[in-house]
Length: 60
Image (cartoon, rainbow, N blue to C red; front, side, top):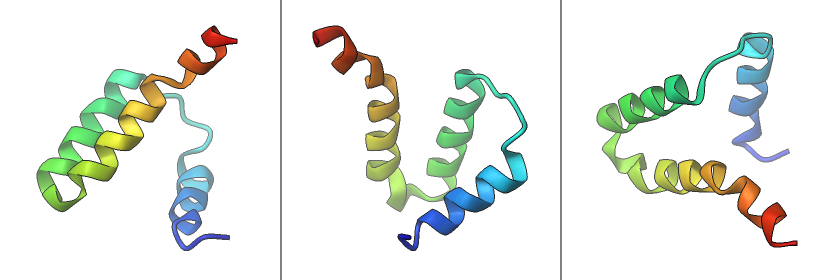
């Protein structure tokens, strides 16, 4: 388990049953970057990765 998996596990355990929209998630990511600008690049990479997940399936 990577160190970052602890946060992912906590998210899953505490908020796992909830359903949220991608609009809500995008808003929370913007809020996080506003409060923590040093994380702008990794958050941008995560958001781009999430946005393009289906692109690979379309190419097959």
